[in-house]
Length: 124
Image (tube, rainbow, N blue to C red; front, top):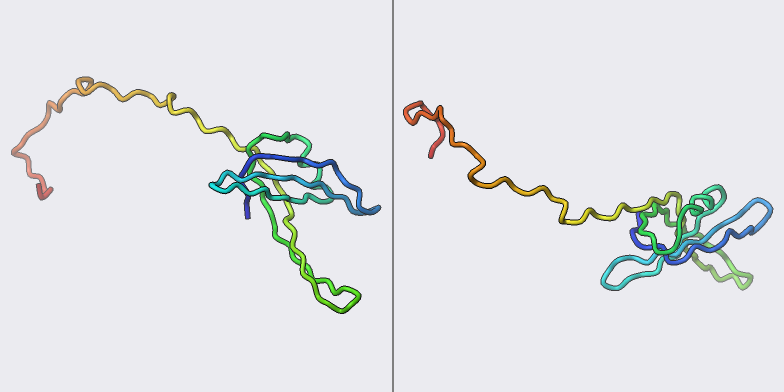
């Protein structure tokens, strides 16, 4: 899956344990009702965020993760997370003014080898 939007926040890397680290990114989607999506990058993927700054348009490839946890009272709880594994800068769209102009109508020459009497199998 992919999320398209603008970088809102890039949090510093967090060392959770001796063998686990994560970094959080918040992307704001470009929709009628923009969403602020928090995406976790873990382990070696945390370095992918080093070249990004707030305000940049990005495309983030994600995986949805879910887990089950039973609390000490025996109740089962479910948690979801969004894990990022790739991020790309989106290229700004080219301005419409760079479209080459259409040639003038008088720039085309009429066909000189046209013969109406040649057999044509077109129905019109």
